[in-house]
Length: 67
Image 1: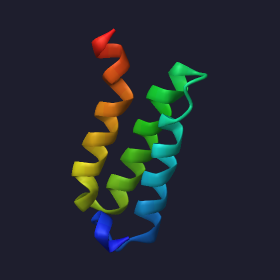
Image 2: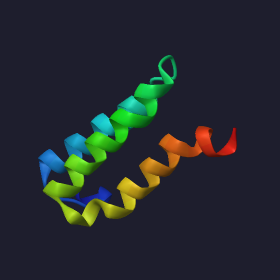
Image 3: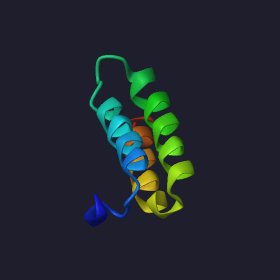
């Protein structure tokens, strides 16, 4: 966990859940809305996860921006 920028287990768990929703290509709405929800939860638990949150949000919205 510490290698990923946090020592807070709950924050990292929320981050991983958000990343999991990024893999749900079947439902594009879920792929956008749910990751941001979990990334925000992670950020509340540990503000140090801001860079990971921003990267994840960029990945969630990239298909919308590029297409």
